[in-house]
Amino acid sequence: MSEEDRGAAEGRVPLTHRVPDLGALELLLAVARLGSLGRAAREMGITQPAASGRVRSMERQLGLALVERSPRGSRLTDAGVLVTDWARRIVEAAEAFDAGAQALRGRRDSRLRVAASMTIAEYLLPGWLIALRAERPGTAVSLFAGNSAAVAARLLAGEADLGFVEGLQVPPGLDGTVIGHDRLVVVTAPGHPWARRRAPLDPAELAATPLILRERGSGTRQVLDAALTERGGPAAPLLELASTTAAKAAVVSGAGPSVLSELAIGEELAARRLVEIPVAGLPLRRALRAVWPAGHRPTGPARELLGLTAG
Image 1 (cartoon, rainbow, N blue to C red):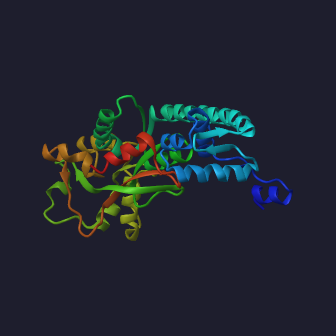
Image 2 (cartoon, rainbow, N blue to C red):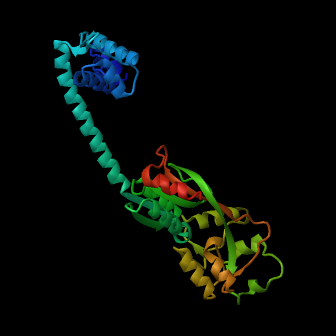
Image 3 (tube, rainbow, N blue to C red):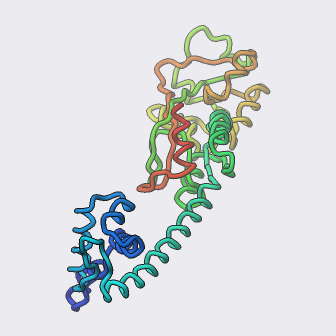
């Protein structure tokens, strides 16, 4: 049984049924101040018939006559004077409530906590944050960069307002939207034997080769593991590193091959510090997503940043 049903069963009528709404109380105050129902209606932005109906409804609700109407105008009854005095205090309290809520919104809108997976944090987010700063110069932004699992944990703990992840699906407990796509690329240093191949690499050979990999929980690792499931998954890593930058540096140094985001290696491919190795029939495309706690669509600066990702 709801609180309202329980109250009715106990003989208590909810306050909302016994007290006029704020609009009616504001109208009564306007009538008292202006001495005319018509002028009060114009100030409130409603028609005079609507204002008359609202006053009659309020009188029925209270069981009191509040306003006397005549060709010379409208005046309050004795009961109306008392009710107006009480109404003024209620409206002042509502104004204080509204001012407090605005202050809270202002404090919320003055900061933005973002959590992003490493690739998005390094290669996409800086441009979005520059654009956000142009629109909201007073918003202080804090950024946490980690793998997709860590981003989800931050959002679920209430430690971030908006997150960005890479991977196969929206993490449990979150809602999200796809903001783009990315392709994973097998790369080696120019001196690696794979760099001299003429035919695409077979997925089974990729799965059997120890690679320089991102850590478990990263979007890159999730996609690679899923793509190689039918081949038993990737071999034990040659190295397991916690950032794309570190993995890329290890490959450039000649430590071994890796699978990295196309977003992260454009400069190295152009300069021939890395070589892309084609793989036959292996889907390595992934979605990039903005995510937030389920049922809590982003508001304020988080919503504005989300809008900028579609530009």
